[in-house]
Image 1 (cartoon, rainbow, N blue to C red):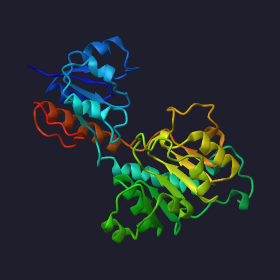
Image 2 (cartoon, rainbow, N blue to C red; image 1 turned 60 degrees about the horizontal axis):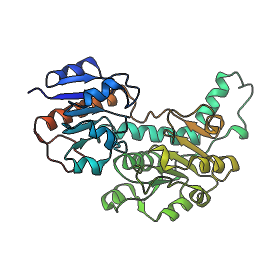
Image 3 (cartoon, rainbow, N blue to C red; image 1 turned 90 degrees about the vertical axis):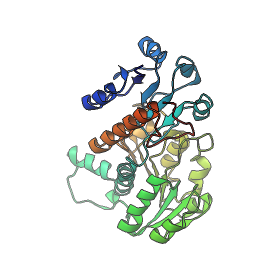
Image 4 (cartoon, helix red, strand yellow; image 1 turned 45 degrees about the vertical axis):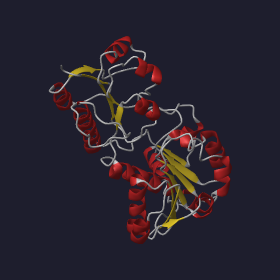
Length: 325
């Protein structure tokens, strides 16, 4: 019997061909949402799902009685009910490693752009407003030699810290992570309590996964503990930050600036105050958005689902479920 998979993310022709060499593929390249009747019908016979950015609920799983594996084209798994999948013996796979360096590039881009006011000043030039020498009112702040505070210190956080410590001579603090003696030796990094990091860091970079514990982690009390000269960087998930509290902190001068690639609601609504604030750099969730990395992510997801549905251990399983084959 040829197994069936539902793919709900735009794929390149060679990726689709690879999948079709192994499975019957129901392909939804422009899926609007989970209530699409054709999508729900395809779920009823699906052994595998491959895609991203679609919340998978227990209700959807009820419509997929044959489901064996889900392969997400992402490193984050906050769109999936992991415990429920494990209970139902459904293997969840994701794509760590292949996007680490690219996403770290994005994180450091936000550090540089927000510190040196790159977007604001570039727009000034494009709008013909550069009519005299740059004075103090347009000065930014240095990055080299400053203190980089990492809230979360997984693969991506470590890669950002390497850029800061080894490339810019930054002191690195980290919290919300277990001790990592080898990295402390390599980077001169220091493990500390959250409050101590907030009080000392010039850049507070958020890298934690979105969980019940981290939702709203960066709230009004946190911003009050940060330096008034500090810059917040968020490349994790938007809901880790209390956006209303952040807007208030930025408006009042409680913190200096922010660089954001993720938001509580995406796409970011055009009427959000964040879109009108000169001290905020906003990016449209581009952490892994390069040709090379998205190709690698899609390929990893495809390798995951092929191995899982053919009974082999896939390269990047997330939960503890044995492939059925």
